Image (cartoon, rainbow, N blue to C red):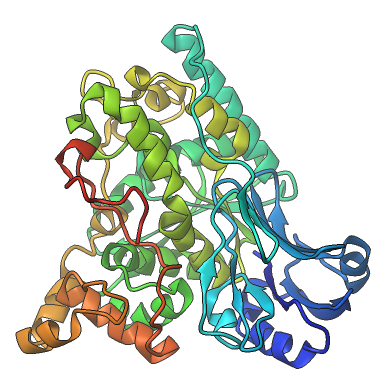
Length: 461
């Protein structure tokens, strides 16, 4: 991933250099700061996302962009600085105002905090010119294909194959994939394996974790170069501070999942420049257990809702864990041609006879071992064996009195558990007490819409 930052004022090179100092992990191949029509733009880049000063001056823009799906752009136009972000928010982008009112932006919050405490996340699929925020393109359902399930599965396979091929276009000699042994990551690995000379797969978890066993089965079946990261509880705690620094969140479930993902990415960076991820499969194809309890007429809306929330939860995990180690991460399930088709597939093909992701299983049934095709959804931290290690540590180290005193945050949010308070304390060590947290995503309570209080907002706080 590249990292971009800038201020809509001339003469801000020192400030933008300071912002880039906080983003150097995102691009280790080069770095530059230029002034373009009264705006100071900066970028760090990697080998797959070059951004020379001449190119910036020619395009009047800096960007974190790669393939059809991922794009965060800051462009100088005749009317000033314009910020744009891809439809699903795969590429991160934040903005704010300096003390003298200049629009500023960065790929990560930590860089913006160098010049402002006013932070906003640019919503997915939107455009902001400093005055008006416009949604340029969002998610919606398309008319369903008038085809039997066999034809739908074949077309889904074709589109997923195309997305993987495009992701690997620059990496024919070797690439990597995060492999949990779940259906989504295994499907991506199965499609990718014949399309690259050498495919490295990476699984992480505590000793005896279910993910390690299932990932090993997939790797042996597909003959990948497989790497396991066996993590001890002590190593979980040792990595916690670095994970929260890069993740920029204290959401309990997100941090839990990110620790294992972070350690797998750390290992991957020793071998490959690119990793494929199976993110998005559960949201597009109804993989979560709670979805089976929804009335059928509510399922489509729920899938659209949780897909639209990925940008500052699961996709933030993917982005930050990869970028922390200078990796590129690609999510083939969220490539536009796959998303558009997935949103047209009838929900009756996604959740059928109690089987989650039924149509996806049909699409790859000839590629994977039977135990993987039958495997049920396990949350990332559950499958990796993290379990309650972190929660138990928090319970043992944070008193009830401390929890009562510290759980209400300045913006009105309430910390949900001692575990989350433990993460919040680490977050504050890195970033101070950030009073405005509107930019931060929170994991959605996975309960059917029909059982949630009517006052629940359709957007994350």
